[in-house]
Amino acid sequence: MKKQLVLMDHDGGVDDYLATMLLLTMENIELLGIVVTPADCYIQPAVSATRKIIDLMGFSHIPVAESTVRGINPFPRLYRRDSLIIDHLPILNQNDFINTPLVAQTGQDFMVKVLQEAPEPVTLMVTGPLTTVALALEKAPEIEKKIAKIVWMGGALNVPGNVEKGIEPIQDGSAEWNVYWDAVSAAKVWKTQIEIIMCPLDLTNNVPVTSELVQKMGKQYNYPISNLAGQCYALVIPQDYYFWDVLATAYLGKPEIYELREWETEIITHGVSQGRTKVVAGGRKIQAMDKVDKDAFYSYILQQWRR
Image: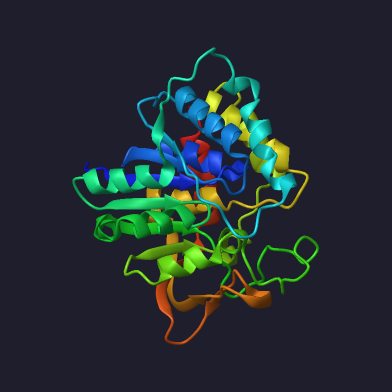
């Protein structure tokens, strides 16, 4: 089987680590590296946790790079502190040293290098803001032709966003956080010719993290990866939590359980709707994950993490 070349760019939230774990189980994927963008995290523990997860899963040849980009609207501290918690989980701290390399280059320069040197176009799996991608394209515009597509967890098309007024009182509630962190960069990526496949809140809102599913992971506790996944989800189970990044990433492994729909869109970069992905006639065409076989998705992740 010819493997699909993938470069991952995540931003250190709980589900970003879980998406990483899922991606590493896919036999049809050759993962060229992971960039950590400093958005939904504190960057040092997020990079550390990512490297420890790669070590645990036995892929310590896969390099990690730290992006140095900055967004416009910071994620709440309450969200970002999860990176500290994950980095301290006992299952990730059984060894004295981390073997997975942290490259000296910034994440944006590493992205440029990987794309330039790849023998064929690469899929970018992005589970955070698009800022690192936008800066890499600005630094080396020629890499656009080396990007096969961007699979992105982001946006809300025909449902409310998740940037709540209680947290950001000057917003109208239409923005999704991965866009809102830096809508200007998202808009820059929208101006390219790169194929974009979005996993928007329209779909993720229908695929919750349930107590039943987390308990099923717990029953697989003798498998380290399922054990870690269950521990991560246990941290967030008291709140409404959905399969955001994991649902987006699973598309690379099981595209047949998804239905896509084309939309014409634009990114709003200012005003009370800053960070909104708006459906507009004549806008930039993107593909959005519209439907998923939920039972097949749940079964897939349980099976993949049973190792």
